[in-house]
Length: 488
Image (cartoon, rainbow, N blue to C red; front, side, top):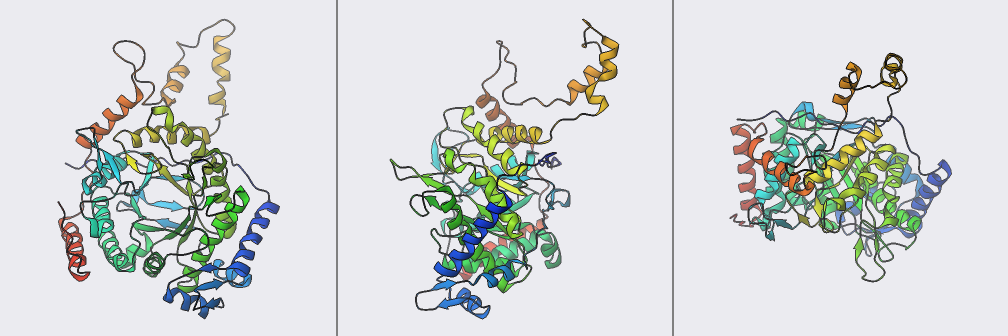
């Protein structure tokens, strides 16, 4: 029997944080405009080059370098909507991006899973995507779902099978970052239409959105760019993420990394607004820094932490919502490995992020462990409570109770004490009392909770007709693309 999906608990801050001054925001915007006008960017899509050229850009079709005059950028960005809705299969779980709340998604798309039965590492499969969609559906912390791992048992059409597993196992909004070809994007749009019920509903309450990564420094991917145009034409939100790495694909200074990353994303957003004015778009800054000893990409480096909330402020300065990064975790040594996520979530929420992502995976977004998402959701809840601020109502100040108890009295017997204690939120991971005394291992508790969810929570299913239509779309894609994908 299906279970009711708990209501989403977004972060609703009672106070705000400001990182950059108006002058600094203007300096960064001017830097982006100067880069786009004087340096330009590489765009290998002939379709996109034609759109840029038709709307006032300076396009060299031979070198595929595009330069954007500042007035062209500003005019295009003025068309973008500041607020819109990311819909869900359940209307009660729609995400209204009106600036009042922050919603978080899982991380994605990993390639390995610690097996839920054998505890051994293996390549991820479609069933893992489905399992974690169900866990996401149950957790009130999670506002929407990124397919957390790849469906490697369907290698040719993995991205579409990830959507199929997601739509069948959560009523919440789904965001894809693996449908990055024009050919598969068309099928993804058809799948979204099936889930929404009709095209008008899909446009008003899109159950699917797309995240496209730019190529650092200052470049766009051919297939991904054309996929983005397909999504935008259908009215599905499209975001662009830069993962520029300071010291290698971006300047080593934080400000320089931000400037390059911002220029990449703005160039892509401008294209969408040129082609489809008013199409919903979003800005997602997730840069890293090159480790000076290994040369590796470090997403959780201390130096990158401040860039995440700055990315929120930049997005809003351009007049669009943001998908903020909240960091990555490099190890699995213990539950403490996720603590830094709470700080990042709180920072981006206080800066006004509409959405954020980056929880539930380990080893720099590559490894899924059964307990990680439940653990990380605890730190989201910590940030949510801290962002809510302090209640200073007379009831909370307890003046009348203090008067009643008086000096050297005791508050335990007071009705107010019982009422207030029931309102307190304690961690479900670190406050589980052990029968042997003390507290249980949080990882053990998280694993137990994950398996309980998988055994007991069954989200409202798609109708038989919808299931049949999604399966038909997958089979049609296999046949029409001459892929011949075979699932195991």
